[in-house]
Length: 405
Image (cartoon, rainbow, N blue to C red; front, side, top):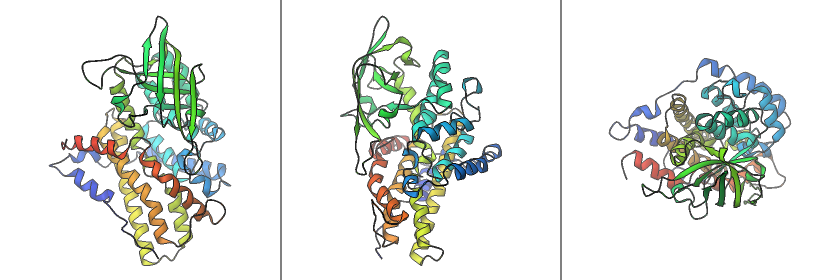
């Protein structure tokens, strides 16, 4: 039995630190109970998933929210479970963020392949709903809600990473619209997506490095766009690099207000960083580990699984607190960064815990379901602290929120 130094800092400990009255008000993570009408969806979603994914193997469930299946997304759209916060006039169900939270939680717990519609549902639809023109809402939102229109997010660039203020991709205004040039990097699902909402430079502002940026909707089928997949350790190609070479965009590509892209994108990042996907990416390994250990764990196994469960419950409560702030129209960027950083830490530690609790070796081909899930997550977990903002950037945001920098 291998026994290692498992803990750095627990989510519960961090929560107590963040909640100290002389550091940060407790209201940032005020307990928020799911409304009964939202929780009422849970059994319907579970029945749907039990029927739809009855033969779905554990090794594919391990892909969690990176599993790509357009047919599954279309079935979810038929159920009304995409774009749930979108008003009915645009194809949604006007159900609110808590109802969506319940659906997403069940999808992730089951390892459903939601990647195709994921970013459009989580971010792009809400961004268009909040900042878009009426024409943009009418054009884009119904197809998103049907699970037929897929979006990616163009933020990171070579040499900038999560430091979005240093981006160089530029759009120049013309008589008829925009000419776009530059490059985006680590763009999830770009090669499968129909559209990108890109953060670009539209002017050089002396007011500060966060000024002069705008968001544009880019049709990825336009001439002048080249998309190259980036293959990771497990052979997946979720990440991509995207090149723009004199791409012509129409005037209505602009989302929101020109020059206010930074303010818009910080609000968007709260959606990206706070959901249950930020602590459930490794949940299939927890399920497989418990099944492999069986009903009679030894003392170490019982203790460590209990610790994982406690941290998951803490993160869930923190995530729900952020959802409550989003539902109230707030911009909880600081709290969302805490959820993402602490959640990613746990997600990356779960394969280490599992490897210490069982002698079963990971297996990329063949072997037990547990061995296959362990192999996949041991190789993919390092990327969890890249997507959605690196750990260094998140901790900088947290430090500023605490008044430490």
